Amino acid sequence: MPTTPLRLARVITDPAGATGAGGRYTPALADYLTDLARLHGLRRRPDDFAGIARTTFTDLVRPLVTEVADAPTDLIVLAHVTPDAEPGWPASFLTGALPGDPLAFAVADQGVAAPFTALRIAAAYARADGLDRAVVVLLDQGTFLTAGPPPEVGAGLVALVLERDGTLGELSTRVVPGVPPPQARSVLASSLADFAGAVVTGSSLSPPPAASTGPQGPVGLPGTGLWRQLTDRLAGGGPVVLADYDPAARCLGICVVAPPPVAEPAP
Image (tube, rainbow, N blue to C red):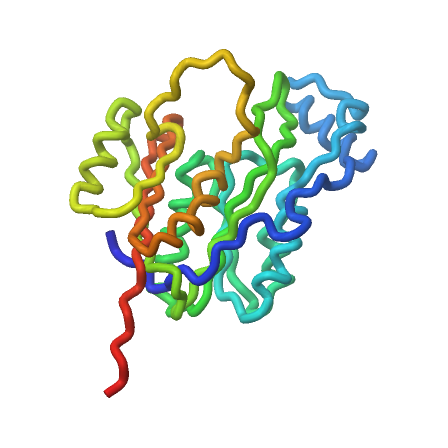
């Protein structure tokens, strides 16, 4: 896997205020969402939205600005597994709020493989355009406007700040498409045949838990949960692999974070 020209400089998890409940839907937006639902055959009324306090992606990224505004940013790539809580423009908000007039993308519809694609986009632009800084923003939120019981998902943000002189590690990322579910673990194993270090996997690649009738665990964080472990894993000093698989998209994502080479002392 090719190494990204930009190294990992910081991992920011849930900046202050990022996961607090946002405001409620305005009457105008509730009317809009009701009409939108009707177009898709869903029976929703404006009153259905009156009691919902949602945290949008823009709510989540707003506190990130103060964390990364210390230097110009060239590129922003957002990645999310769940949809936003309302039609919004979090990428556009960041391009206007951060110094450097950054270019922005968003990656969706790849499930838990989306963060890996976001890192590959950042790497491709860094190679092509000689970028000095990119911020990859991973997002989760738990307000769903679809019919039926919503998934048990929480809200959260993890931002990976990539810079030329980042000291946390060099990144190598790969996305393998077209992997059938029964082969996901074997494809991962063959991809890591020569790797010696810690391997952290998502739930689709982990051994199934033992049957339990006990209480449910905490709400899930499909877009950020795996990446929240990165800081602690890097504290060990060795290379780390983060891997996840999305059965619906049939995509396997693999990211190797290796300690950067030690600079030789000047003669």
